Image 1 (cartoon, rainbow, N blue to C red):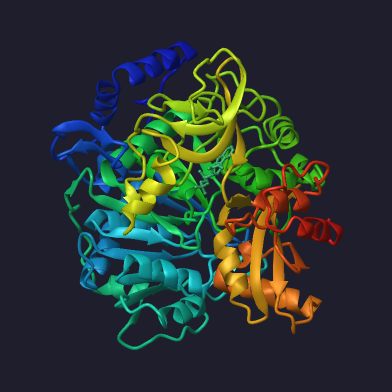
Image 2 (cartoon, rainbow, N blue to C red):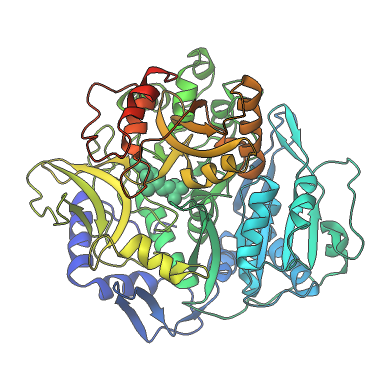
Length: 635
Ligand code: PRX
């Protein structure tokens, strides 16, 4: 588990230098530590202008042999997954590497029995239960491509994703517990399935005993299918560049982007970064609180930790149930050593009484992590002081669905940390801070601010957007020549430490969820009373950002609270409850440039109650609307 770890800052610096000077040798040596059926012929082939990136071409492997089979001899009885249920009175589940291996192989045969083959796409819409991990690994075992959709998304959002990648199968659960609520996932799926012609079968895991309506010929229960399946399932031999999964992330246009990750590079990238950032030791217990429906869960609950032979915790519930001490209760109960969460959770918990923290013994903790959005100074200190008691390094890890693995982060206990800074790039990552003229700011010894790009490929970079390579090129490789553009702004201090300042495009991160404003606008515009809308983010002390919608109504439609409610519901049904705008202002017009583009910069400032300097409005077609909107702003 510790075989890839750098142990000192000097070692980090040496490795970093080598990774820049001799990237191929650097990654060759790391990749060599995994189990391959055949070694690769070519380490790297790339051309950001196409764009094309290929790692370990010709190499043959299966990621589940690296996550499971290769550990059986020495770690077979070690706990791979500890599952903590929503209800603290229900029993935790401990699944050893051997048990996980057996369960994954067994379920892989269920997939095969239902006609799933290498290359087929399987959609997973599941709660945080071990069966989600089993299903995803079972897909990987037989070379099927999993497309996990976060189980908070609406029917319409599931259908859109299933149709985009033409999934043949959907795996779900009948119901899910979330805090004091029970959500009927199967019902949500049934609605989605009305519009998904590619789905041939649906496997349903019974999380509760409630009766579940099943469609004859299409829907099958997980346990019934297991009864019919063989237990052993040899791993499909995959090419390093074969697809491992598709994961959708929000984009600046309405359509979500299906990011494609491939087997070899993703495995090497997630495992190397997991071991180095978190620095786990043999008996440590690692808990990442993310949902597996997001990239953090893919890379750092499942693939990175399991390929490293670690013990990884999966939690079904929410931080506030049965009370705000739940996270700390679990840390105490399971002796968690490494705790990885999002700033939005930290801020929400920091608002509660400290008693929720103090009544639990957190002395097992060694390392704290943060991910998903910038962590503000106050939250950083609360986390460091009250949870880490000043003794646990805080690793602020910057990365993206597209990068597959952590890119900029301290190595726990090794890299000097600085509150709110993700600090230094990991070995193999070559950031470029770009100025307003599109030039790289190369002086690392001077403070600078700009936009963040990456100038050299790393193994776990997403290879394309499923079905739309042109869009992949346009979004990530057309802003700067020969560089990957992250969409983030960044500050760099005179020691070369990076602080990510936030998105510079039309994506807003709300409670750590990446939301494209265009998708939400499309949903609002569906309302029969709405002519047009514009959605922007504004700062929120718990969620990081919240959404503010400016909505133009038809002349014959009266603004009302009822209408606001309808619009919120519509967004909830079309995208998901997380995308509901906090504020809806009805306006007569939107500020537009002469070319007809909405000037969002101004709307953002108004929503943020920062109107002292609205900047240049002279290029607007209708500057008078700005005053009008400002006067009635909901701030
Ligand atoms: O804006 C950055 C922010 O989250 C974006 C990526 O979101 P997503 O693809 O959903 O992946 C989230 C989990 C990796 C980035 O473009 N972000 C992520 N981590 C940080 C961050 N912003 C600041 N600091 C971070 N540590």
